[in-house]
Image 1: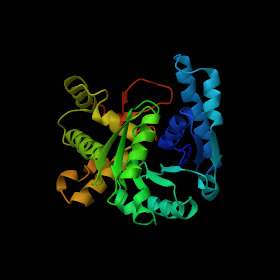
Image 2: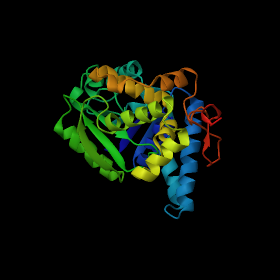
Image 3: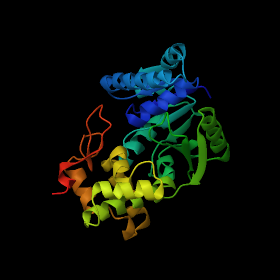
Image 4: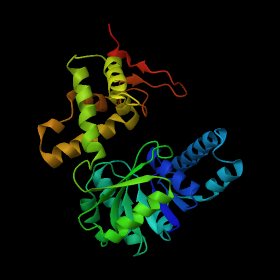
Length: 297
């Protein structure tokens, strides 16, 4: 398994393409936009520069990594030779189902189809293909080149052989693959998102401010970043989408998204990606600045 296609060149997609290419795989990076692909290659190059600066990669290895990545705007062309295809598109169930129908039609019969979904049912995704035994969840963590975990999700029909292959591939990437079954939110987000939602409720109900909530969780619970900062980093729209999947999947009111989160997403305040969330994010700045709306009067 040496030829990999990655669908989507955003934050997760370019990170996934990066780690496969750096570990010797031939990567086809696919997106509908040439501009998005060029931006992704620039991001990968910058991230490789950081590794070079730390002495963990040579300039030659950087160039070799970049040479392993080819870009395509035509999905059929990009996936036709791939042994493994990793979908990393927006967390939207209708979009993912459409992509997997197309992948099933375009990819060679023996190819494994993986989704980087953080919450959507692998069994549901597999149901639109003619190869449900070869469909699996491969949930990378952000930032992909740094984070070690890959959450491996077995759908109802995923074969043990395919699971074993994906566990092995993840190890080849220097990751720690951890297997779980296909239930809403899997493990990572089933536990993480209620915590983030509760932090937002604590802010919404006036229990404490943004900095106070994050400081308590960082210093008291040894979290590397507070839940509100993390929500901004993940994307508030993504958090809302995952909470809706949990709420719909379990029918339990404890997963209902906080009204403040809903309002922020509707207003276009989605965190780092838009520059506004619980914090104000300025490109290039590492200073944490609470958003004006949440500053104490």
